[in-house]
Image (cartoon, rainbow, N blue to C red; front, side, top):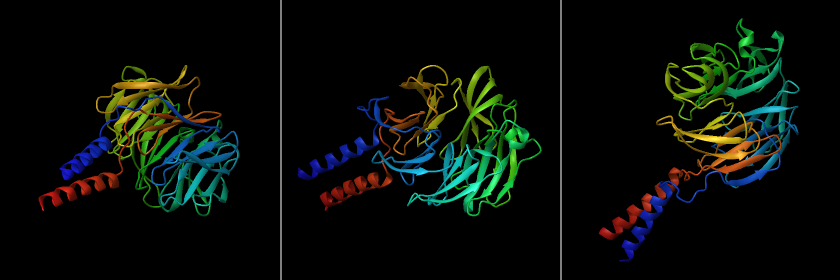
Length: 357
């Protein structure tokens, strides 16, 4: 009888860990940090959130497990976005205000170096051997460009083609193995999506797509690298819409009539998509990527959020504002770590084996 009770408890525990949550309160404010942020960078491997804080010229670091603020790192002027090196030891921060990139040690949070760039950096990704891929901000032709920078020496190479205007405020995303780079232009017609092989120091173009509409607003790569999401306007019967495209051939997999938005986030399993309302009161809509339908949403304040990301458990949404970073409950159950499921299954198996013996 005692063995049966233990087995029952183990089964119940496994079901609780793996089932959807019935007690989560979607949209509840879990925590608020008293500093603002521009773009947010979630690093699942270290359980950290990096927030570029342009108001105070700092990189803010949050431990997403303990929900604690663990560091404020002084960087250059008006930092906009941060990116983590492949080995997780460095964080690179693009400082739009003074055309520099800060190199931060991810353990000591010391600033190891500061590189001055040819153009004011806008978006940033880190490839193999810490090669940086940087798009730029600008309103004149000599301020536009697409840079490849050696993250160890700061040596820069302009990889812009003859259409320099195309790269102004462009978006970049990189695959998890750091071998494929994706670029989407911003606010132009036509909207252009391009792919590059960056497995070596020489970037190689792998084609693109220019038949999707105009006015690109957001680019997000799925965690599994199979899909890329591009926020666009003026095509497929929508005013503003979100396209789900296959990374293999840039073919259109699906569309979301999500309206105008400049910030989206994906759940860790790529099952759900979150988008920020661009106009009016601050809010987030949630879409199922199995049928592209809206399944819910919640308010996140009275102002527009600059960026959103989802933590590794899928239960928390971080939203950046000018003067704060707020954390909300997504309403979904936590995604159990493989070690947790394995431990429960091993315990259950051991009990059954002892019972038979």
